[in-house]
Image (tube, rainbow, N blue to C red; front, side, top):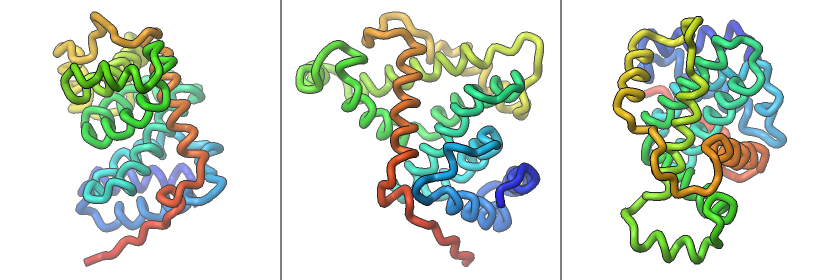
Length: 230
């Protein structure tokens, strides 16, 4: 069902009214439900970039339901990363990296929740300590210290991949300005890393973790979402 034209029309519907556009919501629900199955066809999609955009736009519609919100964000992360990995167009790769960075920026609390699970799963490789030792260390630090640092590394990698000296990415001028403001702020500069692995490896481990969720038939991931028009 989800041809390139259908995905393009869904994106265009969002641009005409955002989450208030009924046509966008109907299409976004149908797209999500197509991939809410096991095994999910998402891992074989030919349109990871367009799907990543749709899921990014759709996620906040379910911001009051942590399970649905998280699943949609996971889909967006997986698809945008796939676009970075496999798209033959440098323009799409760079645009996907920018959109992934903005996804982190725009969905702070759910991203921290996802990252906390990743932190618990990958503590040994990230910090060279078992989880129990890392948890004791965390008690002496500000809340979310480690999750924030992990997201900083992921964001830094996205900024690195969005370096487009000779091409204009396929995103809006306003998002380009946001990217420039984020870079200028230094928010994602890595000065004294707590992790023991390079930034690229943090990113790779995180997306491997996301891919595992995509491939696992958790109840929340195979639940069909019903759009109710009021």
